[in-house]
Amino acid sequence: MNKLTYLVITLLIIACTTTPFSGNRAFLLTSVETENRQGEEAYREILKKEKEITGSREAKMVEAVGKKIAAVANQPDFNWEFRTILSDTPNAFCLPGGKVAVYTAIFKYAKNEAGLATVMGHEIGHAIARHGGQRMSQSMAANIALAGISAIGLAKMDPNKRGLVMAALGVGVTYGLILPFSRAHETEADEIGLTLMAKAGYDPREAINFWDRFSKAGGKESVEFLSTHPGSEKRRDHLKSLLPKVMPEYEVSSQLGTGANI
Ligand SMILES: [Zn+2]
Image (cartoon, rainbow, N blue to C red):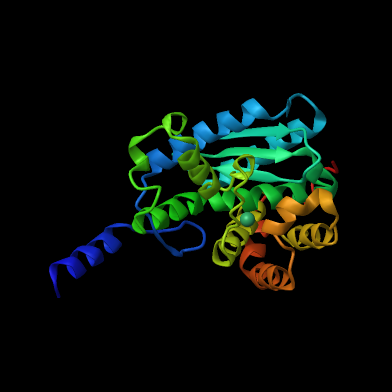
C-alpha cells in the first residue's frame, strides 16, 4: 500500500459516521459545529428576505408539531427553531442545527398535523442525516470551490461560494441554484421522518396519504418542492415497506392519529 492510498483510507475511516435512525454510514469532512453555524447563518439570511407569520393558528401548529418531533429526535447539538413563512410556493426545509421553516402554501396538502409532521419529519431527517454536510464534504473531497469553507463565515464569503453552500444545504433557490437531494438521501430522509412522526405520536400511515395528495398537486405553483420531492410510486412503496418497522413505535407513543386539522 503506498502512502497516498494509506492516507485516503485513513481519511475515509475517520470521516465516516453512522447516521441515527437509519444506521447508514456517511462520509463527512465537515464538523457538526461548522454545519450548524452555517445553518444558522443561512436561516437568518432567508428570514430577512421572507415574510414570517407568527401567532396564527397555523404558525402555532408548526411550532407544536416541531416541538413534538424535536422531543423524540435526540439531537443535543441542535438549537431548534420552527418558523412559518407566508408564500404561494409549497416548500419546507430544515437547516443543520434544527432551523426549520414551513411555507404556508404547503398547508393545503398537509391538511392536518400528521401531514405537517410528514413534511417536517422528512426535512428534519435531511438535517439529522447531515445531508447538507455530506454534500459539502463531497465537494471538498473533489477539491472544488468549497475547499476551506469551514474557516469562513457565510456572510464573508463571495456570493458564488455562498450560493454553493446554500445549495448544498438545500436552500439555494434565492441564488438560482436548486440542487435536489439524491435518491439515496430522499429515501433516508423518508425513513427518518417516518420514524420521528411515529415516535411523536402521529400515525405514520398518514405519510402515504400526504405524498398521494401532494403528487396529485401538479400545477405551476408547486413546481419547486414537487420537482425536488416527487411523490413517485417508488417513494410510496418504500414508505409502505417501512410501516412494519415504525408501527410498533406508534403503538407505544401517544397515538394522536392525524392530530387536529389545519
Ligand atoms: Zn427531501
